[in-house]
Amino acid sequence: MIVTNPLLPGCYPDPSVCRVGDDYFLVTSTFEYLPGLPVLRSRDLATWEQIGHVVDRPGQLDLTGIASSGGLYAPTLRHHDGVFWLIGTLVARDGDRRPAGVRDGTFVMTATDPAGPWSDPAWLDVDGIDPSLLFDADGRVWAHGTRLAADPEWDQQTEVWVRELDPATRTLVGPEHVVWTGAVRGAVWAEGPHLYRVGDRYLLLAAEGGTEFHHAVAVAVADEVTGPYRGNPANPVLTHRHLGRSVDVVGTGHADLVEAADGTWWAVLLGMRLCGGYHYPLGREAFLVPVTWEDGWPVFAPGVGRVPQEVEVPFAVPTGPRTAVQGGASGPVLPDDLRWTAVRALPAQVATPAADGWDLPLRPVTLADPVAAPTFVGIRLQHHHADLRAVVAAPLRAGDEVGLAVRQSERDHVRLAVTAVPGPGPGTAPGRRVVAVHRRAGEDHEVGAATLPGPVDAPTALGVEVRGAVLHLTAADGDETPVRVGTVRTGDLDSVAAGGFLGLWLGPYASATTRSPTLASVRAITYAPAP
Ligand code: 6LW
Image (cartoon, rainbow, N blue to C red):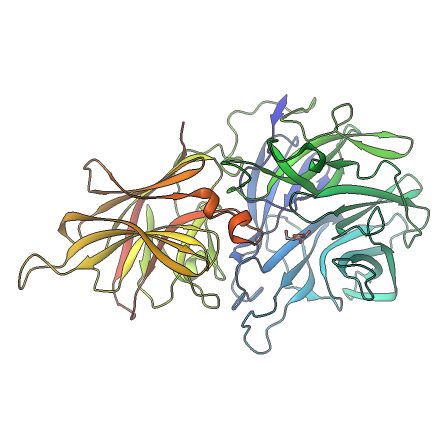
């Protein structure tokens, strides 16, 4: 069967994969969004369905005060002896306003069922990001990860450390070994390390170049897990940086390997599809690449040397349309859909699920707030051309907003909002003004507005129509023909323009200047790829 890349369209960066019997399991980074760390299952590497999240209950991890692009970074998923192990990092960055006593850093969690429940975190005493685990044949467990070099010789130098993990106490034990700083002297951001036992040697896979244009995959081998590691003279063994900026996919790197049940090898890794110039509004997506072995080294996309658009997976069976998480769903997105996430809180903590939508409390927390959880639930933008639609209704007061948002971060997002304006005459109900606001680098700019007939609480049909380089914001009174309220360039919202690590999220939101007892209703929420 031919598998079309990306395997997972939209923001699914830093994929990590493992196989248990005939099943494959995959996790990705989710930063400030909860539930965090989606778990996907596949029977054949081709069709993936989401079965849960690693971080999905209140109190498991506290993301309060985690500004955008902090939070849950590159996790690694492994399975050993009937137990799934997840190692990851909750990153709090300089300037994040965390409540006193709340933990962050690197943690492990375990589960017997990867769909959950997952354990509470066991925190490890180590700095840095991108941790991974190797369960060695002799029963020992080796944690590894990356951090800024203790004594850097050059700017942006990181180092990969290896240290034994005692699985019983979930603590790091014994001495630490620094084993890698990149394939070439002066390499920046050696990161995303994964160690594997292949035959009687240890293989180290690591990204370098930084998770953007210069991203690359490098490999090294050693006879002992603690090194010394010898790099492949062919490093980097996979990169698109030499292909320039007019290519379809850039930034390929951060790979993880898996051996299929039939003995073939595969890598999942991240890359970004360009859209509207050098921009990638969908963020870093997950791709699949075949791997073979020559002279003891893995060869990525043999004979091709780049991430292919289509991959032949011989053992995969066509099972019908791609799943929702693979961008195959079109239509209603009901509240129990696993695609819903919220910022720094679980969706049910900021919104109330209804049969066919959400009821949103009008609270004095805005999408610009970097500490508290705004009333926003969203799904990833997964297509360069797509429509998000919903019907909103609420007895709004002056200063209240309910609508649809396109979110990159606190500093960069778009709001299409229904707002209240004074009614046509004394004693009449407030009227309805729909505004389109582009918050750019922390400043709100109104990019359009439309006054609709009828009272403010009449149902308003809102739409975000993403069309490659631009997105149009539309509004309609009930079933009337929508009017275009504003247009924003997607390239002004992506991480190239705004910074950070994320793709765009879309969804309903509400805010108020003072708390209101009424709920805003959001119904008939649909997401569909557009021609
Ligand atoms: C990830 C790391 C990276 O942990 O981006 O720049 C981080 N490097 O590998 C977030 O995806």
